[in-house]
Image 1 (cartoon, rainbow, N blue to C red):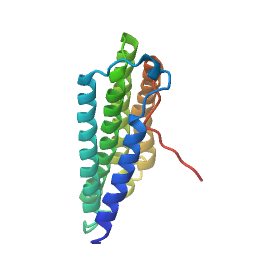
Image 2: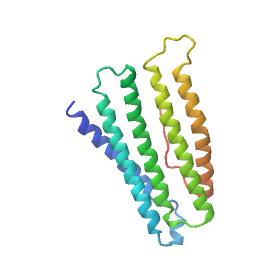
Image 3: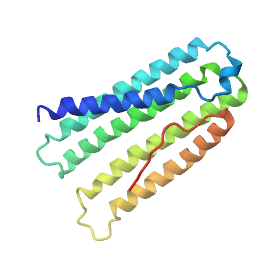
Image 4: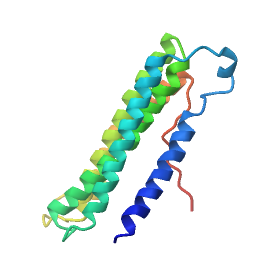
Length: 191
C-alpha cells in the first residue's frame, strides 16, 4: 500500500498536466492574426480558478485513496464517504475546466464571447452537479434496499444525471457556439 499512493499521485498529476496543456493552447489559429493583448484580470482569475481546481482534484484523489482503507466499503457510511471523495475529484476537474475557459477568454472581446463564456460556466456547473449527484445516488448499488418497491439505484442515478446533465450539456453547447470556443471537458470511450 505504501507504493500505491505515490504512484497514484504521479499518474493523477501527469493526467492533470496533460489536460492543462491541452486546455491552455490558443483557442484557434485565426486568433493569432488579431494579436490583441491579453486581459491580465482574466489571466489571473483563470489561473487562480485552475489552481483551485487542481488542489480540489488532488484533495479528492487523496480522499479516494483514504477510503480504500475503510473497514467495510459496502456499509452505508463508508460507501457514502467513497461517493463524497469521488464527487470531490469530479468537482476538481469541472473547476479546472471553468478556469481554462476564463484563461482562454483573456484575448477575446465582445458581448457574444462574454455571454457565451457565462453560459459555458453555468452549463459546466450543471454537469458537475449531475456527475456528483449521480455518484451519490449510484452508491445505493453498494447498499441495496430491502424494500421490494424501492427504485433501482442505477435507474435513479441515470435519471438524476440526465435531469441535471442534459440541460447543462445543452447550455455548454450554446455557450461554445456564442463564444466560438471548443468543448474542453470530453470523455472518450473505446473498445
